[in-house]
Length: 131
Image (cartoon, rainbow, N blue to C red; front, side, top):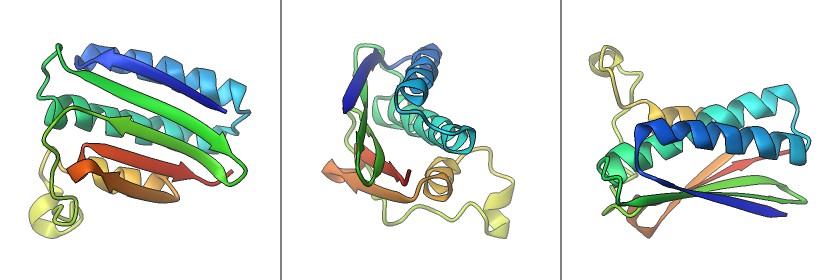
């Protein structure tokens, strides 16, 4: 089972991502704990794609796909950016980074999902949630 949504890279379009996650929560019969984790992780991934990947260029598109199989639910977010080095993300929990206002998105996605993978130089992220 698979569903997708494509949005223009504008922060206000994150509402559409939230509605999409609401729809898949009902369709895939997600419990409230999984729903919360999936919603926050998907919004973080989409926000990163919009802000860092597509640089808030509303001519650039962001696609989120939800796929469910026997092993879990997969959320894939793809932007059109150049990507990033996902192996050298600063740790937001160390003292010098605690006060920073950004830099927690990937950390949150890692903590909320059961598995995270990056593809295409980092402009595609796949989040797996065991069901």
